[in-house]
Image (cartoon, rainbow, N blue to C red; front, side, top):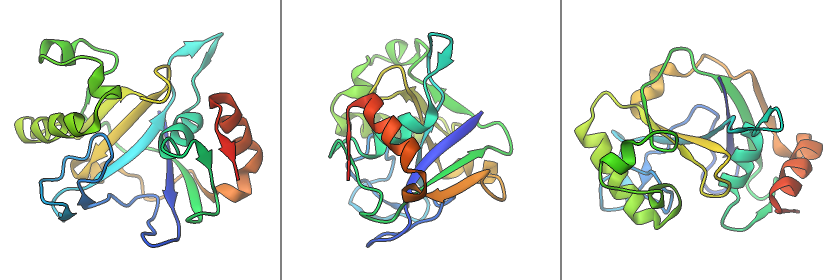
Length: 192
């Protein structure tokens, strides 16, 4: 299944399509880095969009999920702000992710849907515990907090060997403005 990733190609913290972020924990939902905040080379995280629930015969677009998740704090897409890029790739091998959006796992474990959409600090606590207790789990699949029909995936450093040698697509968002504007309009975001 193709995965979609938006990432900064410039600015103070530029990255590449296949880079796992070792700095953390940040304010992101499933950062599993230990405290204190800082660089933790043994802990890496990558946030991705994937196709979601099928409506009207079509799956919720992975690209729209990525736009929604990446720009959710500002609700405005700014492709030039940090020279943002978009990459699409399919993993080179199956990864073992814990699906907490389309299964009963989170309920059985004593949680609820707030893990995907509530206070992020609690979700980070869950992520640290899942990472610690389940050494073969390589990430988390979940319902997007922006749009529950969308599906998102957080991969951890354990999934690094699943990344392909190159993405199927990697391009500056500025070069894809028609797609950016359609995705932003679908979720009610502005575009600079």
